[in-house]
Image (cartoon, rainbow, N blue to C red; front, side, top):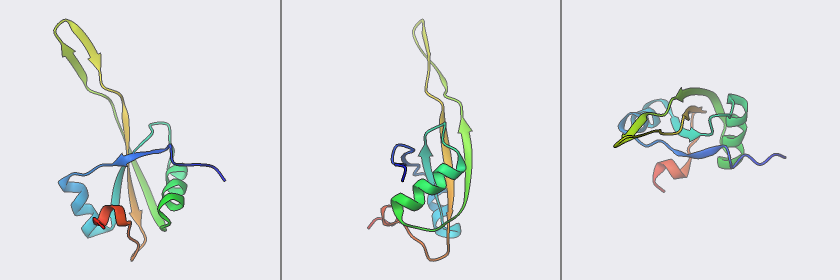
Length: 96
């Protein structure tokens, strides 16, 4: 069995993601940019012991930032929107 803990970086908590959780039983996670949908599905099912119906992903390019003459860039990141089966819950996102 493959370890998938390195794929998930953490939750994305915004007003929109909290509404998605309540209305559509979807959770939003920040994941490693190289992860694909199959790996994300297996990771969530293995770590949280829930049934996943669908995985949607979005890639974001890091913003360019300046500090005086020095120019830099924030890292690129990827967001995964995971639809859980009806009745499935993750205690971490329920506040328990």
